[in-house]
Amino acid sequence: MGKTVTVIGAGLAGCEAAQYLAKRGIRVRLYDCKPKSFTPAHHSEGLAELVCSNSLKSNDVYGNACGLLKEEMRMLGSLIIEAADATRVPAGGALAVDRDAFSAYVTRKIEQNPLIEYVCEEAEAIPEGYAIVATGPLTQGKLAEDIAAKLGGNLAFYDAAAPIVSAQSIDFSKTFTADRYGKGDGDYVNCPLTKEEYDAFVEALGSAERAVVHDFDKREVFEGCMPVEIMASRGKDTLRFGMMKPVGLYDENGKRPYAVLQLRKENCAGSAYNLVGFQTNLKFSEQKRVFSVIPALKNAEYLRYGVMHRNTFLNAPAVLNADYSLKSDPTVFFAGQITGVEGYVESAGSGLIAAIACAGKIEGRPPVAWDATTVSGALCLHISTPNPDFQPMNANYGILAPLFEQARDKALKKKMFAERALLRIGEIAKEEFNHGSAEMPK
Image 1 (cartoon, rainbow, N blue to C red):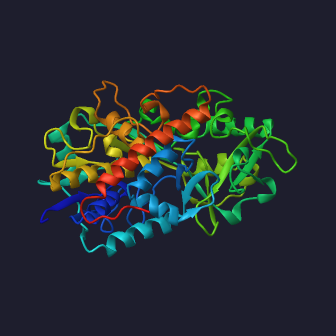
Image 2 (cartoon, helix red, strand yellow):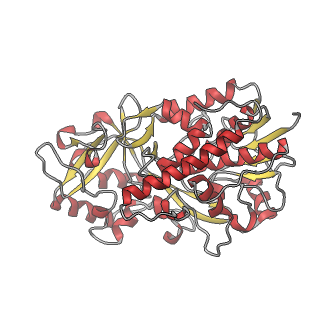
Image 3 (cartoon, helix red, strand yellow):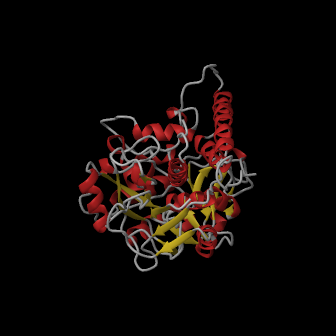
């Protein structure tokens, strides 16, 4: 075929794109600064590092939009979902992974692919020729300056990560094991709180000192990653209707607690747990003080404290087409959170769609007609449809095209959305894998 595609960034979107192109017989030059240097959020040398939660959210194909997106990606041959399935840890109905094993799986696949050349260098400009820029929401340095100069319209928000504690330091005598509504095999450790304990925790949160983030404005924080202390400031019971809701959880005596903090395994060995939904920007000393108010975490040892960092994304509708290519240069694509999709799966999905479009252009084939009957297509339309108030978007049913046949039952409606989407993805997959050297996923 002769052409080589430059992929900048070896995160979820970049690795997804590189592997897909290579499966189509297209050579890839994959650039990343690791391990020579790291962004403020990255710590390990492996590719596709998960910097926040180890959960890729729900795996329910017929009851959750993100679960449906995963299945769409499986059908299209996604490396990231393949890696997640292979390295999953118990998490009820969610697809959570051992983050080190997950990164190692993706790294091994990339390193073993003869059509992918890994270049440990920091890119300084948008490449010429066929390229996919997947540098993530922490794009910095000369590349960020070049993007800003050529595209303009960059926006910013803040993202936060939850703490991780040592399993040995948790007081399991003050916990119970259960999954919400019984969905799972007892994959969550629940830390119950009485009304008095909950009130004390909220009071401690309200008086806690936050870490300084320059130019911080809480209006810029993406709602899906809102720090727990900001959530608590919205009202005394806000947490009880959010990340600490007790609904669907009952202890061994059949009693529902007043409030509950859930812990989820970070790795297969179960030696570490993360505080589910507890993204925070508190100072490290304050995290230890405040979270110790929760009885089960009184003597918790923190393997990683919660952090907040700046995320940047493009004003995508002004600069990107629906296939994630630049309006000013359709041979250059962007992928990942920098495009305005939000979440691990959504980011990887954008890399997959960009790679499909890039391969199609190189092969001289008509573009895939993405539409809002699939979650993948709906996200394509979200980042490319004019919107003066453009903001990051997760996978959700609200962005899908309405069903022709109305259904009052919510579960039935979600099932109908899924059946329609998977039928369309099946058609696309069949067409895509009838070209090039790629094999149809099993």
